[in-house]
Length: 80
Image (cartoon, rainbow, N blue to C red):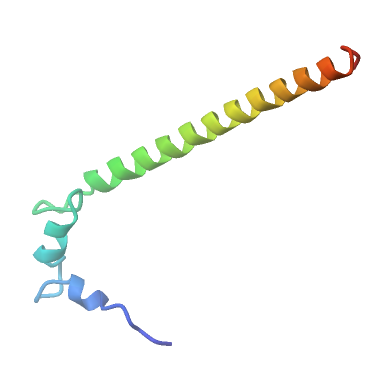
C-alpha cells in the first residue's frame, strides 16, 4: 500500500502534539489549549445546514407536485 500522505508532519518534534504550523493554518482547529470546540461548532453547523437543505428540498418538491397536480386536473376538466 502506498503511503503518500505525510501524517508524521502533523506532529511536533516531540511527537506528543500537533505541529503549530498545522494548528495555525486551521482557523477553528485546536489551539494552544487543545480544545475541540471549533470542531464541534463546525460539525453542528454542517448538520444544521444539511437538515435545512433537506427540508427546503422536500418543501420545493411538494410545491412543484401540487402545481403539476393542479395543472393536470385543470386539463382534464377537474376530474380525478
